[in-house]
Image 1: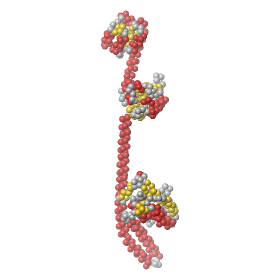
Image 2: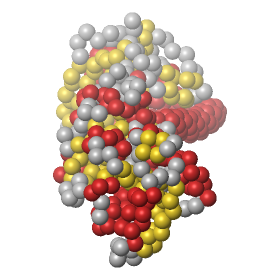
Image 3: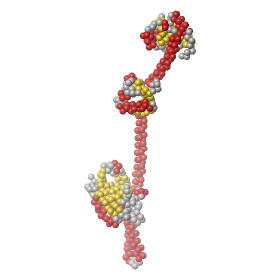
Image 4: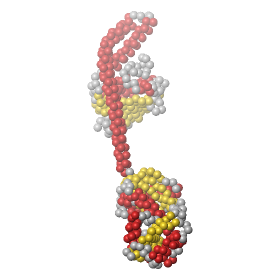
Length: 539
């Protein structure tokens, strides 16, 4: 209270002598202006407080209608917002302590009073009372904050991590009936060791650096195994001198939000998977559609090739007989005409080769299958093309696995496949080179069990199938990447004009398809071409 401010005093005293004394003492005080209202009974004082406002109450303990400590209790109950100074003739230390404990600001003995002491007591009582009320209000607001937020766990800890205070939400979450039960405990008493160790590390860093941890998402695990997700903020707790004496924090339960987030992630993952599956299915459908279209084209092409071959075959025979007749009976001494006739013979032979390939491409699908050893077919075919290999300076290296299972094959047709591949390899190495041939068996993995559709038939390997693999690799220059995709197309060839019909590999692929196998051609690492043929094994 400002020393010059006016102060209204309610004196509750039934002894006129003491009233006069108090009035005289207050009148002599030079540092303030006091006005005083006097009543002689407790009941009169309580009635007066209803209609008037006072700054302080001077209360005697020996009144006609109330005596002793009970007087303070009654007055404190009815005048909770006004400081009380006990002014009595009883010099009793225990009574003095009791009155202070029950709300009095001071205890003065009448016989020891002087003006200065009384003035100081009144001013201090008013100041202390206001400070206590402000502190009480602050504590009340703090308690409301701690106890009124049901999803927030609030706590204070000392520098050793022991709880100084917790709210009811944290106590209940930790399985405690009363927040007081947590006092003196640490996280190691309430939580699983892993979480407690992580929390302790964070708190030591907050105290060391003075920097808070704000909005950290944590998964809390109690000692019983129950878990929850929280959003945690931890701040340094400062002492009166400004030094760090611990930490305080607030953890907000976000378990429902976390579960919703995980559910959303799960839904998004499912949607993403579904969209990817749909896109993949669409791509597969497009590929299948293209393959079916290609199969129909090839079928139509085969039918056309057969018709063309039959239509051209007879005229070619007539041309060949005519050329032989000319060669035999005419132009015997005409060197220039003999050269023309020789070129005509070569042209007819090339045409016949094309017709043969076209007829082979369009030939019937019937196969004469029987158990065949692939290694025997490889060796026999190499004997058939020995002259071509020797003439081309091609060295052959074979690595044929022993004890290969047999495959149900049409041997002449598979020989035709191998001859075509070996001859193509020779043509790819005009300066000579190395032809490496391998055979082995294996069990197909899931990645190998793919479907391939040609000629309107599904050729499928499944995981776990036992297969025989033939690999043929040359040391030639390889095939340009842009041409690899067309390598099996009818009438497509990488050879120069007059060196190939473009039907050889188409026939090869068709034969392998008819056997339910698979063939692939790719450029090998280090140069050259690698041809891989996979056939189902018996058993």
